Length: 445
Image 1 (cartoon, rainbow, N blue to C red):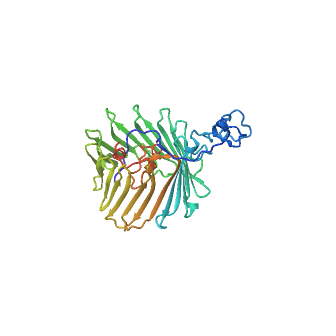
Image 2 (cartoon, rainbow, N blue to C red):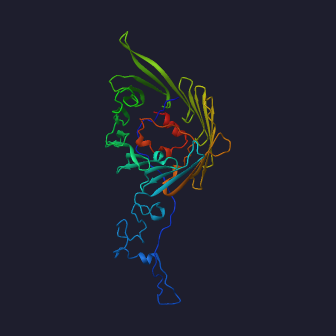
Image 3 (tube, rainbow, N blue to C red):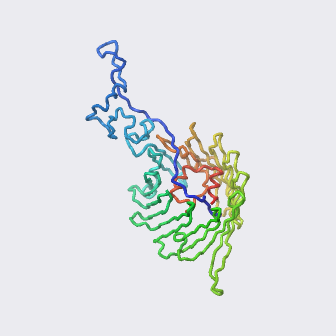
């Protein structure tokens, strides 16, 4: 399998484009048009403008949720969150302005019935995600709450599980005055102790210079996955050319990755070496583990990634630079995914074909449907491609929700590594499109 690569610079938290739907606003009534209330032929005409023109003069005893001096009957923004009532999914709740709901209906085997809700505030930020299972809710129900600072940066994620919402994971992100992420802390058991800490250092150009992982729960210090230090070395042109890794934080370099760029400054080759001591010669031996090679089209789009051991990934794009095919070769196994799009460039279907697997892996067809605004409304999964639907997911929206929430889950381009910290990519699942640029960012340092 190939190794994931990410872009060189660390960005700020993802901004989400929101889409507005309508609710019904309440109104009032009073006399209007200069008509006399005593005229039997002219019944009184009540209008909100007459009823509410003196709302701030004397509203004693009348409801005013946001305490802004305007009574709720006449307030265009009752909860005071900055979103007008008709565009607010919950006009009486200042913390929520938009809600998106996914309703899962499955065949009872690999696909189950469930509901997933995404809540967004008036600042266009995802503040909570909850998954409600209809099967063993005590174990399968889970939720995530997101906290941001006054700069809109994600600083805390608290995860819970079960009906009683017991905290089982906490993640914290710390930034410096330059808005650079300098520390990422995780707690996997819900107590007050953060067992794992990742720290980030930068050079004068703002590029990542060093990443150190430390996990006190790994008492044996036996895994570089939890404890390691990676140092990033740049040339005089500020291009990344080498990564040195101390796998156990013991002061010695255990592996080195050398990076070669092509004339367009795209990565052309990556060589991974392991360093081991020779007890006989009392010297260090450097052994090549594997080489990754990359090819591109004239636009710089990634066409193929070779791992040097026979494994590869190839991409094919249409004229809009959307991925229409992705083929993954791993030994004798092949995964072939083809994607179709509508005239608006939205993915409408995909076919997954599996070949050479020892296990009986069935081919899969996925279908996506959209409304006139381009928002995803339904996805269908047909395992074995026999016309029987194994899972149906319907999407509904209230108030202001991310427009790009409509990316159909046809295939995963891969998760970014620690060089692109989770704080900047945690929302990628609702923003990721199947574009050539997304592939570039995935592989390019």
